[in-house]
Image (cartoon, rainbow, N blue to C red; front, side, top):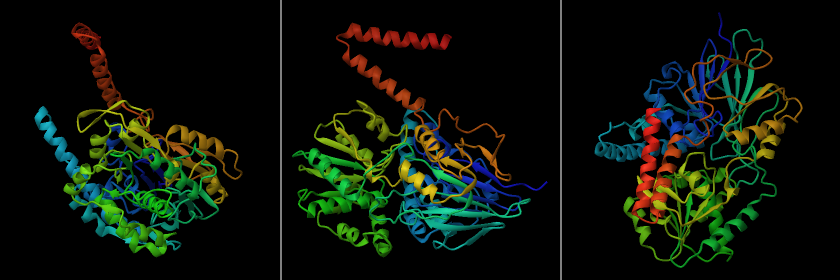
Length: 533
């Protein structure tokens, strides 16, 4: 019996990371994105599991853009046996050539540190998901495609890339699929990540009309940034920097190394040149950001305000640090300065070292400029934690926590609705992905007022839909790798870390030895009762 067109949701379902969708017919299987899971430890553990499909059976991979939550498992896919083409724009191909090896290097580094701790604790050692060498090997399979041209990608499949306005090279991918039993091709549009109206370096997002299905991101589906402009954003950044200025202090900005860092840098230099901020040393403490900035300079002619970016990158007040020694040397500065370092959610990279060095000091300010997924260190700090654990050490939080969300690379709720309205009619349905529950439900409610949208579905991870009829039909699935209640939420690892900190706080606050002993006895008794029960 011929296999109808099916769509599998293997990631970014009720969570904002791990983007991965599989389109399947009896002739071919095509992946759209193959991203790494971030967020809670339960979600990150999915990166180490086998793929829920046979990698060698995939015909082709189409990438929306180079961010790691969309491309980060490509080397693992190749290592697992995928030998087909990887279609991406030239900008995505260039960025992936630095981002994927960097991801492999970070994994090697972090696994090495973890294994040292595991050996001391008598635990088993682990292997990285992939290495930098694996990532470099996967780059041979990339095939650059231009915007706006149909590209055959597999038997019965062709794709066309539209500028999504999110990142250098980012795309929404239109897909036409000729499946058995269908008189006409089924037309789908995978939005990828949609950029907002006020992006400094990217144009407004574009896309086709008259579709059967749209798979739409929902990261900020519950937010309305009414009145957001570049001028307003710069005023707010100016005020945050002024408030952070201490004679021997620092402003730490956890930032994605690619595009977010470059946008912030342009704004800071514009404010200094206009006299609205004094001249302040700005350290870009990220080898990846340095390499990415070189690629942005190469593509400056394709970017909005590309000349301003080149000028900012060449400013005497901007210092790029590449080596670990250069990074450590920043700690010896005794006047106010700004450090921009990855990762944007504080889950890896040099920002964790700077947080460890500064969180306990009240002269420090941490400014979040991007989305912080549930369960990440960034989200825990943003939510007001008084203590956190970094590299196995307990750190008291005295630094100021601030958020400036106008740097997000994602459209807000009204912008997403307007983008979809420009794609109408959508004949068979809309799937909402790449969002947490509040954002998904808010956008679902908002889209219900649009004409020519027959239904808005919020799929769960590992769900499968038959797209053959007039409407999508959910099929039975095997047990999900991640329960719906866990996707996009804190997990027991977060609760455990918080409990340890609370126990330590209670013991420290106890007035004398006897009171401390009582607390310890009560905790032990509770554990004994639980084990007996």
